[in-house]
Length: 187
Image (cartoon, rainbow, N blue to C red; front, side, top):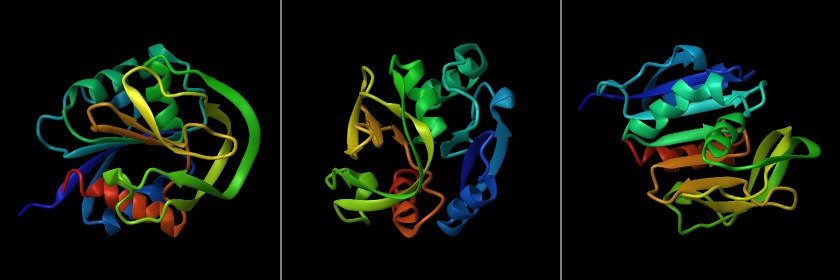
């Protein structure tokens, strides 16, 4: 059987190397493109798409339109991490708000019946580096994880194909185990 391939969209993350390494540890090859260079279609080459975090605000709908169009038409599992989740949420009508700056490990409660959380306990410790928070799940999505400062720490589309995490899952062991749950959706 051929090894699965993940298209990683680099939205300007500081941790691209760590993110790619996590997926490679989980048995997937990775290809990287930046948000301005995403293909119009996957053409069967990739079994999943991962959107990295970003240093740019997620509100730039014109800049991210080709990326959002790809995500919505690709038909493969998608995972948005930090700014990647925010880009998808804003495109679907979600609203972000400023909150306390969080850097480091923080506890999050997750809905363990979700396949994404197959390998973790109901409370996970994940790495944060941000000040923007999604206030509620946009139409077509639901919150599947929450914390004191973020009512939407994790997000899932109603059809179960698109997921998002406020946290940077490329760090910490709980993050790796959540990515393992995502990898089981496409491998």
